[in-house]
Length: 160
Image (cartoon, rainbow, N blue to C red; front, side, top):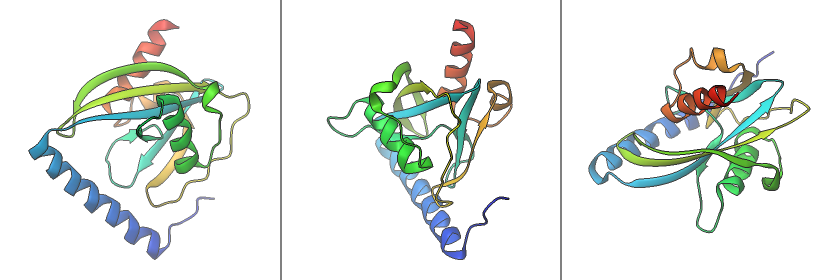
């Protein structure tokens, strides 16, 4: 049974939404270059997908790469922060990197991936992340998703 967010969670979701809109306005003026890492965690042919409170599209767990951090380290950190799933950054490999214009910025995105034998328990905060679950690539491609995720799935399917 899904856990329903509290009033405090709803307030924080609104805060994330407003903050993201303000960032987008800033990006529209500044046109920055950003570097982020998303982590693709695969189990039994399905991919962990998340829905953030501030964005219309579904995506993978992820965020900015911090100074001195590799994409694998950022992916492992973000996966733990957003979904409560801990994996060693040594087990994660870079699978995709591209630059896309996205939300008024030049978005340099690395997608790192890891395959797990056992489906992990997902623990989200219902604040930044409002939903997370494993879905097939075919199902994910029918959803509104960020452009780099679509490109990653299609490239992975092509590679076999």
